[in-house]
Structure formats: structure tokens, C-alpha cells
Length: 442
Ligand code: GLU
View 1 (spheres, helix red, strand yellow):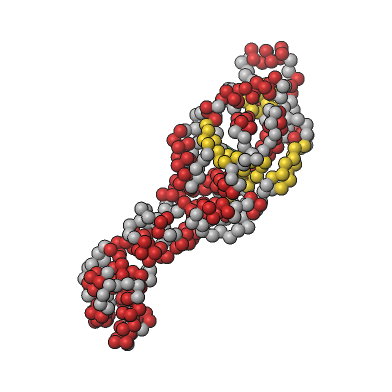
View 2: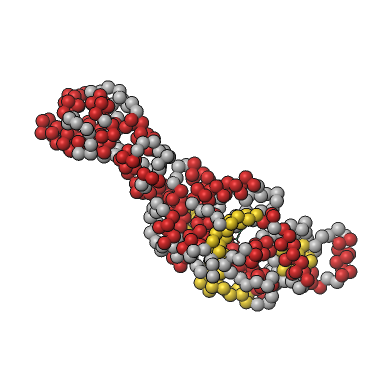
């Protein structure tokens, strides 16, 4: 069996870290098992869906390293949903109802008052053709409910284990609204069947939908795919993230300067039994991916952890991964990568190494700095220069430790912290180094 999964966002906004996690789990699952990944835009809500959001989603996924094997828009597939709805009507599984929201609410209240579960009572099934004609003459338009089978539905969720639902406790779901538009359920099931989806991996907010969908798959002559419902993200405080998700859009994280592989590593490993570690390549995550490692407990998302992870990732990132995105060559990158937590900080170090700085030299260090300038070893400066040079200065000046190194750092970089000077010195070069040690802007 060829594995086929889908990521099915509604293009009504930018995707955020929570959606991206679903996409990434689908992607890793598919790639781990040699399968295919479908990007399906659930855009049956024509008013709220926007092409610009679909385009932005595709771009965000590409940035994360996800290249869908197929892309579909539900808005182009209405004929399939219409045909499925007709079949269900013919089979007596899709029936017209006329209750207004107020009437339904009153029914629910009455049921609750009697201590009964607020399940739709199927009163509409009792309507005669005359009753319906009268309601329609009164200006009412039918919405359509799917008649669930009285049965217990069970499936083995790849994350949550065996799940069973008694459909007697679930209201027959509305599949088609009074204005003729489809709710999410029918198009989703029709597409999952038509596209040959083998596994549905999504958030656990959809787990009860799954029970209804299993019954619908079967009513349409199909069989249901495998399911995996992952827990949802919460904030660091354990509370829901929904209100803050807007500020955690993938585009926003990218603009903030996060590396794509930081976001991917974090999203893929959050809430799993694996330690959250930076992975510089998607392949490394694919190799060790296993849905069984996901915990059922909510996964806490903490942006400070993401920032730490970004720094750890940059410290390991080879030059090839940043070439074209930073100034400077491989030697520069290797010298400074351990000292940055966002890639943009590389530019600051580039200015310090290759631009002009105002050296910082305390009055008491002036003589020492002059002596250091004069003592720079002859020949090309390389990574051994620092040791030879400071070793000599130690002997001639009697300085050691901080008293020896800090004035050199302050003069050479203008700062009291930063990358190993042994690596920076050859990049700064003899002319600049000498000038800076003499206190000149260089
Ligand atoms: N469009 C639905 C959502 O974003 C898809 C749910 C599903 O994966 O079945 O919630």
C-alpha cells in the first residue's frame, strides 16, 4: 500500500505554528514510509477563503521544506460533493430538516432539563411530503442531516490507541446548510476517498468528527483510512494557544529571523519522547520519525525555547546552509556562528570584522596596546598567530589572563565579548589589527 496523507488547511488566514506542526507530522510520516503528501485547501467557504492565503500557505510550507506531491482546491470540486449528496439522498441517508436555530436550542434545553443528552431527535424524519411542502411554502428552506447508523464505531488511532464511540450519543450532523453550502464533513470525506488518502493525521479537536466520518466513508461505499489525532499545543503556561496563534504565524517567525529547520525541529519533536534538539536537515528527522513517540498530553510551546533552539541550530549550521544569506566566507561564518542566536546578528559581526570600528582602549592600556601592535608576528596571520602573539606578550609585559586578553579584545573589536579572537584575528587582518591597537578607527 502506498501511503498518502493530506494537510487540509482552510485558506482564511496565515498558517501558524499549530497548523505547521500538523503539516510537518504528515510530511515526516509520508516521507518516512515512502509515501505522498497532498496539500488540500478546504476552501468551500467562498467568502472567507482567499487565494492570497492559499498562496502564502504554499510558500510557508515550501520555506519549511515541505513540497506537496499534489495540490487541490475544494472550491473546484463541488460536482463531486453534489454527486455524493445525491447518492446519500437516494439511499435515505441524507434527510431534509427545517428547524430554525432557535427551535433547535429549545429542543436542547428541554432534553437537558429532563437529564437527556442533547442529541437531535430526528423529528424531521417524520415529516410527510405535505408537511414539507407547507414548511417550504412558509419560506423555510431545508438543511440536510446525515442519518448516522445506530452503532459503535471503533478505530485504532496511531497516537491515542483504540477509540470507540457510540453514535447513538451523537446528533446526525448537518452536511448541507439551508443556503446549499457544504459544511466541512462531506467534502472532506469525499476527497479523502477520491484522493486515496490512507492516513488522516490532524489535531485531536477532530477526534469525534472521526467517528461520524467513519460512518460516512462507509455510507459512500468506501472504507475509512487510518487515523492519528495529535494533542494540541498550549502556551508555556499550559493554557490554550489559540489567542496567541496569530502572532505565531510561520511568516511571522520567518520575519523574526528564525531558521526554517529550527521551526521544523521544534514542531516535529515537541510532545514526543525524543529530546528537542536542533536538526539541520529534514532527512535526520525523517529517519527517526515515529508517530508512536507522540504523547497524548498537550504539547507546551514556549517561544523562549524556540529562540534557544535557534541559537543551538546556528552553532551547528554548516556554511552551505547560510551561503547567500550572510556576508562573508566560510571562515568568517565558522568564526562567528557560535556567538549568534539569530542569523541577522552575523551582519553585526561582519561590520566589526571588515568595517570600521572605534577601538576601545583604556588610558592604562595604551602602552600595552602599542606594544601589542608592534609585536604582531611577521607573515600571514592565521589561526596559530593568536597563541604565538599573546604568548610573546605574556613574557614581555608580564600580563596574563583577563589583563592580557581583554584590552586586546576591546581594541580589536570595540566589545568586551564575542567569538574566539584566534579565529577573528586572521579575518581582521594585519593592517586593521595594527591600526586598531594604535587606537585608530579602522
Ligand atoms: N480544514 C479542516 C481544518 O483545518 C481539516 C480537518 C481535517 O484534517 O480533516 O480543521
